[in-house]
Image (cartoon, rainbow, N blue to C red; front, side):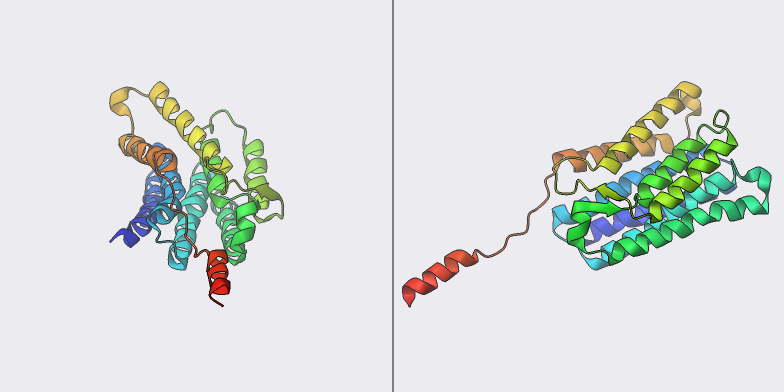
Amino acid sequence: MKRHIPNMLTFGNLFCGFLSINYIINGDVKNATILIFIAIMLDAIDGRAARILGVSNNLGKELDSLADIVSFGVAPAYLAAFTYFEPFGLYGIIMSGLFPLFGAYRLARFNMTDQEETLKHFTGIPITLAGALVTFLVLFEKSLPLPIFIMLFYALCYLMVSTIKIPSFKKIPMPKFSVSVLTTLFLFYMFYLVASTRFEKVPVFFYIALATYILYISVRFFMKEKKPRFPKRKRFFKRRRKRM
């Protein structure tokens, strides 16, 4: 049963991305952005949950990539298409559609990268971080000029597929850099919702987001990952020599 828990978190990430797209099409940007941030937190803990439970496998890795392209590639692209790129009509859809294409290439390249190398650094920024930044920028639609948004949007596309080396903090017992940025953005967004709306008008997924955030904090800070145990070969050889 425990081997299915990380996959359920990944499926939750994917389903949040799907729901987010549905809310974007219906014009509910607030719930759509909250769902993307929920997906971000689920993505941050599914891999850690797999390591804690000792059930990491290639299937989970592939599922994670498929969920990421929907939640952090397609959903943020739709968000940009229905906000900043809406005046361009069909051309706006095409302009925003480049984002998941670059994200898919980045994920495919990441899956082909040696695991030892990913422990040291990332090549290009993760799609999770890029999608979160696009989502966060959309919140400033009324104050952030369109040319600046377009410049940042395509800069993120380029950074995903670039060969820029970004340090990875996987070996350090603290939140990864990208995750720290994402949680900070999430907290800013929560404060933005509370400050800009009456409490009774807070979007429905606000409370689910807070519950997910508490789960995220619990897994990231209070649960320790299991370290793989390997046989002590040196002692084995010493004993064998004594017998000989």
